[in-house]
Length: 205
View (cartoon, rainbow, N blue to C red):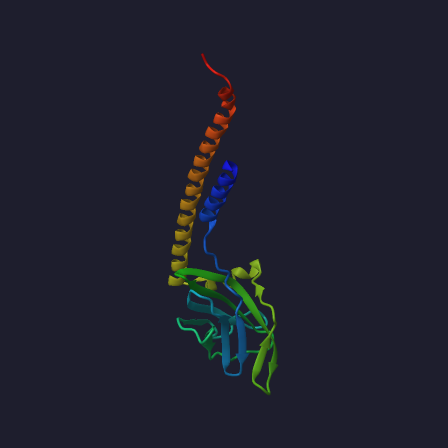
């Protein structure tokens, strides 16, 4: 019974010590048409802000003129978060390279720089479709697109959030260490008592 209790305590302490909210930023749905493009994600409880930073690269990997785009919203549309841009100067094999920043329950999360390639333009419906999959930027392209990482206040806020997370983790690790030390001490005491239990069978005169 004692050891079952110890196991329950250990599991409870471990759960309390390592539980920390983590949110995986989803890859957004991007819809491009003759009037511009939209960036969309599903709503989840706690989301407060959706921010998009991107640029359009031509097929020969040059930045298209006037194509650096910053969008943000604090309000969702129904069960979606939608950002809209009127930039529409797209050609086949152009790509949108971008990252997302989402604030959820007061904590900021960022989707790493990602590439979205335009493969087909439907002139009749003015719709432009892109590949179904997005591709993380290759390391050799990071320098070329380094200015995408200049996110100003948003990145500063994200660093503050990371600092807060690390401080929280340190506190929980210390709690875990102290709790395990206490459990070890109790187990040692119980083992010591068990080692001398045979004395109960003798009468000392």
